[in-house]
Length: 188
Image (cartoon, rainbow, N blue to C red; front, side):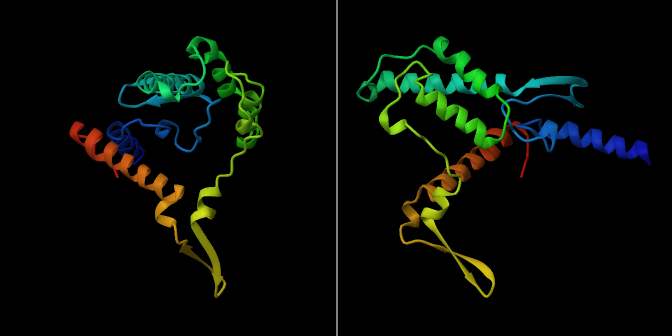
């Protein structure tokens, strides 16, 4: 019986693409994590340092912003920031452990101290993050018969909450149908 269980697990793991944190199952995506998993299909252990993956993603975002500013100089109000001048600051922030609130606070503090090679603007002082702000701005929650009921507010169709979820759905469709499916990878 154990042979069959192992056999079917190996087949399933070889068919399921190793995307995101699928390799590590329940370990959350936290930038400071370092972990190893055994890739059944490749028959080898793979070591991951999340902060390096985050660093690569940051560099890609940096390039996109830089290209945008080249094409749209009216949005540039400071001299360009070189990636080499900010790479280590960003990587060190990704490597810091702690709760989400502590890590977000570290980023806000670095911005307040102009730690990214650009001056902190007054509007950027005391930045905060509320993961429910968009929801509360677009949806009203009422308790009816001891159950919570959700009602769209009048401007729901214009809300950041709706736009975010529309964009996420569009991205999911693109990844599943236009990116993975032509490669023969069928998911979700």
